[in-house]
Length: 452
Image (cartoon, rainbow, N blue to C red):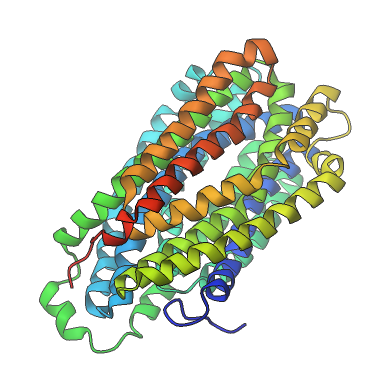
């Protein structure tokens, strides 16, 4: 596959072919969660599937913090790359890795200590509580590796290399599935087995990713003298990253906390509904992958071109991105329309209740029409993130969250669990409108987050 240059090649082609490895990589990353759910649901049972589902929302909070941190690192790195400041770019990478490594250890300790109390506060059904706690404690032991892998992937993408994360995810996904089967079928470890498999597979990928990144950075020439003068850690660069990362981390983590609150509504309907909802959410997480990857590609495209002083090229790329997400939206609609029942059946064993199947199937049949809205939201947010203009982006996403939480809590007693998914496209649409109106002001194009 030809490598397209974000600064020179046709915007639509460079965006699509940069996003494509990220789409494939993120799909394989979702296979971690899918493999856990399918193997546990089919081989252990409905309660085990619900336990993994209850754990998933909490682990997502911590990974979203990593993604928010990665946004801060990637914007600074991409803009230095676009400006040709390779020495500063290299220092920004070192600064990000050291800072976020320390953050990940602290979060792992906190999560390990507090997971039971959090699950109890979320009204996790008693019949799955112990399994959910066990899964989370194993997960948090390996959190620094899982956390750093996401930051490392963001750095690779910032450097215009979306292929290396793809290759590593291909490897780790296959390894994860193999270890899932080994732990569950051979060693009979149940929920604990899938947690060990996930941590081991992605942890190994994180180590390999770090080594490859160090090798990649060594390929940039004419920077040794500058790096020597600046050292390998810059407090000033960290400050620039934090200005972008903190709002992004807060936005990402608060949205995930909001999803935890929404799940507490679902928990109140019992473990069968939770199992069906978990299945539907797993499918949703796959369907939004091309949309989120397109937004991330738009972010890198924006950062590099603003670093090179070409905001008009960003606008051309943004227009082209609409065609990309519309195409993906139509494809997702067709697949879910034809195969929604078969897809849900892959997660739920034959002996599971009809209520579990009906919950997941009804969710998919509703949400299939609306994925294009999260695509439009993602590419618009991508421009704002790439420019480092995260204020309105953060506000829009928090309003999105507020709508989802309010509608779920206010109307669950009237509409039933369906209120939870009715709220989803409402939040996506309002988020998009706010971000788009800010994009039209053009203020993002005048944002400066690096000094050259």
